[in-house]
Image (cartoon, rainbow, N blue to C red; front, side, top):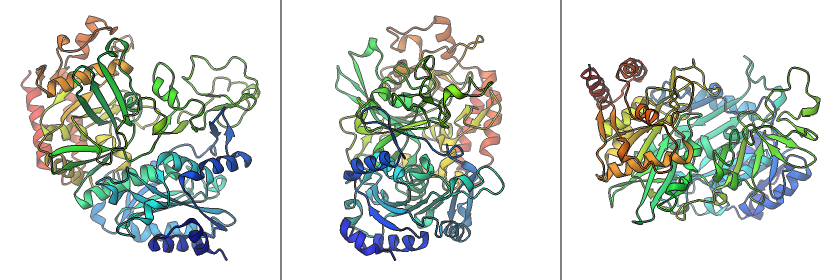
Length: 612
């Protein structure tokens, strides 16, 4: 019989509630050993993982991992929010009763870690001392060493984070059991996987994966699903799938902070890691805070909205990451950074990694190269020569400190004051480059009707928007009507309101060409937004918001045709009238949506009709 108490004593884990929790799950899962993790264990665990060939070296100080071929992404249909209150059921949260899901997961996990080590990972999803620290502590139990290594990069890990809790019971209980990946029936009617957040019990139970957010439970399950429920239940904060950046005007010393949500394949990470274009580099510096999650709250002392990135690292999509699209990310995953790559192509002889978009063409000499499934490129069957080398959802995991333009105050416990909240979906028409929204209800309405054209990562028909409220569709934990009301309550409590805006870098011409260069030039519309906020420009009023005039944008050094600029700063009223019908149908799904949101919808629709 495993001596849990002896293992916890050796690690200095003193929290009695955590000890009881570990004892219970060690017995239920049948783990053979217990190991408590601190961040200082990283080097040893890397050595052990390389020796066990769970990781392979990918150059100096970098590592490569390959997941099971049917375990490569989130699985929304197997992801459940469970509570004890049926009124928590929403349209998107796949709600189930806690009384049904808890025993179901316990039965799947029973004895499933036999012969394995149970790693105890105490973590914190916030800078220590944060006003939101009470919601940030968790303990993940996992039977996968690689999951531990990812968690060390993505969260602050160590026993002190739970030993020092004012309320010893105020931690998220997060249990991950890998299961027999080759016999789980992934994607079939017999699928055994379940990824459950029992939100009102602050418990996360994930079974049947060792990949990404399915297994790194501090990230999406705690940082978004659990946190958004906690923020609502406590009435104190918002937890959103938002990037967070800072822009400093070097001439005035003024720094602006902008956060915002972007659906899949809409440029969120590239924007978060953006650098100033060369022509503006002498005047502006852009700092990175986070590319995936932000928690927002209002400081009653100064009445401002603040945001923190609860994460400690970045879990970025590798595809199309290169020196042009995201030089910041390339530097953050360079040799010596401790980065872990997952499901990219790997050369077993040279220890190089490659993915689609890393270079214009794959390596010409295929000697030693294996694709993400482990197949030698040189031995591919006829007809499969052009199959991707890397999985489209291949990833890199690196700590925030590796990002070269990381903000100097990224660990400020209070977070940073928010000047703008932006939303952006990939659309080839209907959305201009930027449109600013100065009314709170209309800003929240815009976020609730955020959408992007369907991509490989999302269901839908090409050219038709897949609505993704605030980019939180896969992460909603409570009903959408209440979600809208909570947004109005939290942001409405601010004496200093952030300005809202909708951005779109992806308008195309009839020839399929992108009309805006994007990437580093995306700083230009954000600078205009901050100038509008400060009353330095006025823009042009339209039925759907304020758009810049050409003269108001800082266009020095930008390569854009005048006729293209005219188009991306214009509103297609007929297209927007059509869009309003789709929006009404979308919002009608959500019972209890605040009347302020419907009033905003009617105001925008009436303004569009008045343009006739």
